[in-house]
Image 1 (cartoon, rainbow, N blue to C red):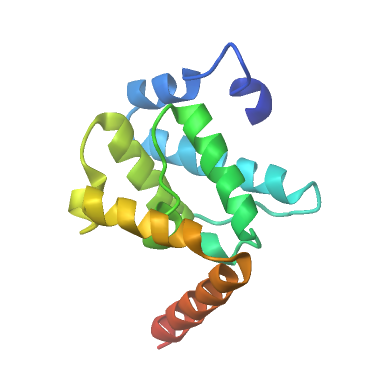
Image 2: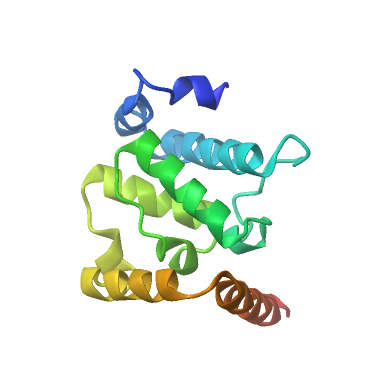
Length: 152
């Protein structure tokens, strides 16, 4: 599917409308496909294959400015607010898709994940106040911690 054309001007919100109308499993698969295609587009044509649903967002090679670009594209395509802190709390492509689908459905994913609205806003402010080097160092520490905890 040509996601750029699908989410271009004049069709804004059409993806969110389609997702709301679909059964949950199909909607999740479609959103995972969209996130993967968007990441590939941001990284350039050389990114193959698309990220797996269980792949950690922070390991996809997106520097912090590219994460902001991903955030902007998700907000435009889905017409939902996507705080940058979300990329640190919902770390896999599938987790991100689930969070966004919950927001589209009108539920409160932040409360279910233990990240209250005020805490999420504070975390977002903290992240935006960091330099790119500090953010990348923090990302590396989190990824290393995740990889250590996932080993048997």
